[in-house]
Amino acid sequence: MQTGTHLDREHCVRAVQSKDARFDGWFFTAVLTTRIYCRPSCPAVPPKPENMTFYPSAAACQQAGFRACKRCRPDTSPGSPEWNRRADLVARAMRLIADGVVDREGVPGLAARLGYSARQVERQLLAELGAGPLALARAQRAQTARLLIETTPLPMAEIAFAAGFSSIRAFNDTVREVFALSPSELRARVPDSGAGTPGVLTLRLPFRAPLNPSNLFGHLAATAVPGVEEWLPDCLSGVDGAPTGAYRRTLRLPYGHGIAALAPRPDHIVCRLTLSDLRDLTVAISRCRRLLDLDADPVAVDDRLRADPLLAPLVGRGPGRRVPRTVDEAEFAVRAVLGQQVSTAAARTHAARLVTAHGKPLDDPEGGLTHLFPSPEALADVDPGTLAMPRTRRATLTTLVRRLADGELHLGADADWAQARARLLALPGFGPWTVDVIAMRALGDPDAFLATDLGVRRAAKELGLPSTPAALTARAESWRPWRAYAVQYLWATDSHPINVLPA
Image 1 (cartoon, rainbow, N blue to C red):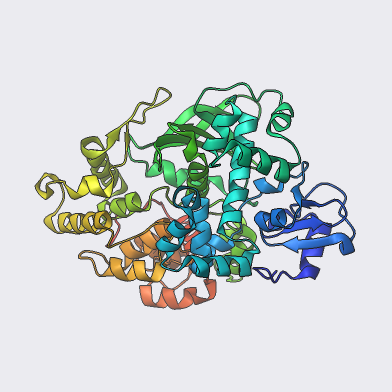
Image 2 (tube, rainbow, N blue to C red):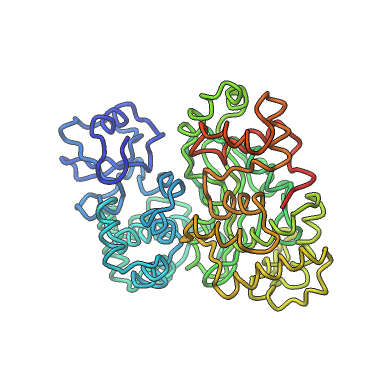
């Protein structure tokens, strides 16, 4: 399957005829006779091949005059894995659009963050996705609007502005055009849409199967910083209505703050968001998806790793491992430094002290979350003498937060991975492990590889793989571009989180 606008028609037709859900989000099928667009796995009878045409984005379908299928709801497909796999201009732009930058700062703001002109960004997106940044952002607003219409009792005017529309008229016109229903007709299709608590939304986050939840939620629970994260038993309802546990954490968002509760189900992730400002809904969803690596293509990853006969048994025992990522890149970088050369418990203790002393307090009636993790700006003003850690690590931490606060170091969705790595390596106290774990968890590089990690090396030795960093790196060449996922499988053979982490 080729990417961009050069879709392989034969492969696309085959995927639609077999209703292959693996390709949901990779491309969209537009039916010429009905003027409807669908996901490849749509349960309806597939159209004749001569009546199919294919687009790389929902926005391109909408621009061509097609409306979303009411049966398969293509706008709720998992996102394309391409944008988490690549670090070029288009991928960085798509990550920023998903984070709501166009709605907040417009196309000029998007271009400025990327370091290109607005015309260059427009041209690149049109060439690969068949739609420019405004059309892509509009499609995202339509999806957010439908979610609010169907899951909240909010008045339509509030929904319009919460979804990012500049006017009620634009909201009404877009909903009618995309879904072939007015906002009130869309709400009438969901009988219980009037129920719920203001500011609290429960939704489903789709993913491509398989997904190994123990890898994701076990790691997040084991490394949770008290006050910012927690595993709360009996938090969300399960399939049979009985309460089940959920990972919960606080979120710093553009317009306010929030709390996310996330729990795995066989075919989706339950996500309950409590937001101080509903304009943050799109951003919160995007960051939760990124945290859990839900847009990954596990079949492609596992097929590549399974080709190594020594890794194949690990993949076979627990396929679908994801890379636990982060909702806040700066937060993770700080935590990576706190985790240098100490146990996981000690790293959590150091982080909890920072949170209590410098984080912004918030209320959590449902659990034990107390603070937002402190921002780089707040930590830049901390007296180093108050930090209970060795002097060299204090210098590492204070240098990092100053670089983050003044903008010299950028780790956000639009970060250039190679540039960020080089700037991290130039900081005092930053060795290969710290840089690679930040690349893997914060930057989202799927090929980041922790060759110096003690747990990875121990697991490699148990499997008969080379255990020295240089030899292991050479062996891992065949695992590219998915070496970060290989790390997850290797950690599964060892008692992870690792007790002692190098710099």
